[in-house]
Image 1: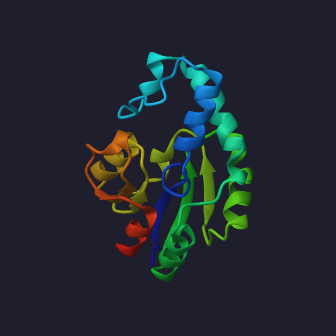
Image 2: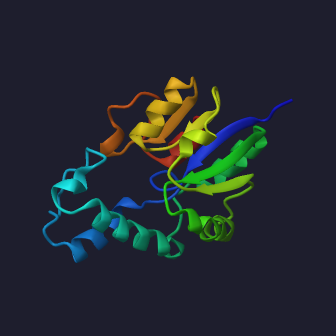
Length: 176
């Protein structure tokens, strides 16, 4: 029997990247407003280039080990394991950072998982009818097109997407 597959995103699902990223961006580029509207996935393009943005994103990812996961993260992995899912942790970040992400997962008891993927092509991991837990609007849309059960934490950038929306990771876990 083929195991059930779930793709679990990191930023915005297991950990808050938005807050430290916004703080770093404001410190580096003061032209970014404190109360900037992040309802668009590309909100930053009004203020800085993609290269500038992703340089700061990479810096924020490199400091992820300093932050704790959201409440409910360990329970998520436990529940998925109990339900016999093959768990693939996937994050849009530099390809050469998977080992650092795996270390953070292990230090925070976020396991078991079958693999950690870092890169820009999560869609390759999404099989029809798997479960996808991700906050990216494009990933949510792709997963829904594939007939996947799609769950995510509500953020300003994904409120218009379909799928199952939750206010917290704890609430998402309670509804697995």
